[in-house]
Length: 364
Image 1: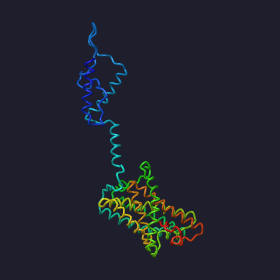
Image 2 (image 1 turned 135 degrees about the horizontal axis):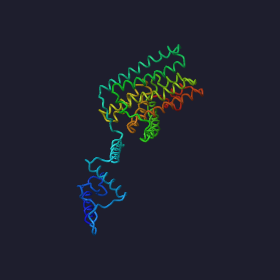
Image 3 (image 1 turned 30 degrees about the vertical axis):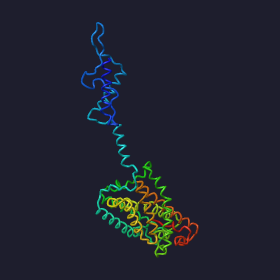
């Protein structure tokens, strides 16, 4: 018995020394019976007086411990097949390493190339123009009314935005061969990633940035450029009827942010980061974002908002964050305009710069 105990301790010491460089791999707590050479460490009883050498009987608890250690030793020694708990821990650590916040300026892993970007932009433009041209005609023909009717016009705007959203998602999914949503990572249900907290913290930054940009643009006379903005188009169709108000609210705060964020942040910004640093990709996508609205007077404010949206997406790595900011911004502007209409105020005066908070009246 003493010899066997010394042998077990010596073997354990050698195993601990051998596997000291593997901190994640633990040696078995004890050398199980029959785990090495057959019969090497069998426990036997000393020869009794007048008796013979017999195998020591084991209790149920000892038998269970022996089976457990044999199972652990088999898992450990069989080609180093890691147990389930070890594989799960390693996978969790790898995922944390890959997704850890090591800087917002890391590029996206984009599998498509430059021609895909050009083709996607072309198809997005086709979807945008065709939806804007065909949706009013289809709505007017369906309702049997002229497009100048208030309710028909709001429904035409909603149908046009729905067509743009459907066309954008379909075209980009086609040119990227279904890899688009794997790259842009639209996962609003993953609140544990902190994207919603990032979006809420970015809203005050967006308000301050747009306000400063509006003051600077007014100083240089940019606000005196002729031509209305996207907000004026919505203001002309504002109505207190429930159907029209609901259609415009869905258009401004749901479908427009969905379409624009998928294209400008999810597709353009991520693709450009393949060839240029992420800050320059954000600036480029914000420039295209402001130019696509075709409102020169609102271009500086839209550019500032596009920068904040791009930074938010780069920080959170979840497209739900800039989409939430975009939707909250548009919904707030639309609600402010509806309050002005309900109170009998002059919306055109508010938007022309004579109101105290006219800088916030911009719908991206």
